[in-house]
Length: 114
Length: 115
Image (cartoon, rainbow over all chains, first blue to last red; front, side, top):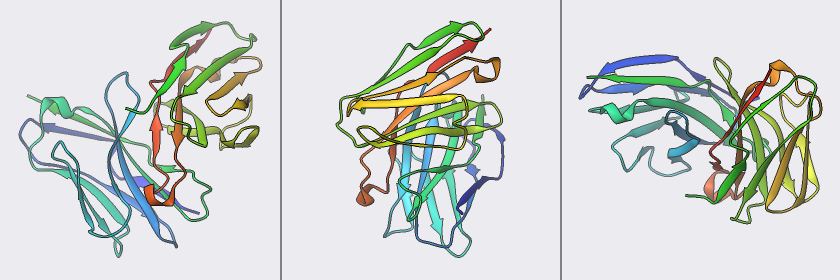
């Protein structure tokens, strides 16, 4: 069975500092990988996804994630965070045999401080 | 933004009363999901639907039932609400396309408090 582990439940960081949110998954089959973001009191929004091809994927607001098959990881990075990036970030995986379900990590709370 | 609405957005109810939450989509997506979100537990799948009248259980389905009589509507019912069902409930939809990796689009959520 597939599983997703987000290695940090909380990540405090100062504004304009770089950040990395870590995600590892376990799967014996090909997977699709996602990062979702949830701003306070809102629903989840897709931030970026890896389906195939280039292992580095980017979002429109400066986040990027790299699919590493050998490490079974999909870490999320941003070189310089803003106060507005404060949110909960969820990593998820889907793939063959999941019947169109996403397997979710428990989330990482990113707190950007001035 | 995907056309997904949830109603009500907030509800307070008493233990033992039935509660129905509604999810409505305008995207004509085949797959619909109900999740609950609780601190320390992330998102947990309650039930999902893969077509009209086709539903299946998720990991935390006890105490919940669902119905889908139309493509656009997916109802979640708590037959007899308990305090442990106090949570934020999210509906999601999916195109169910391998080309999209089965990504899901989420509604704004319903905050349910059972007193």
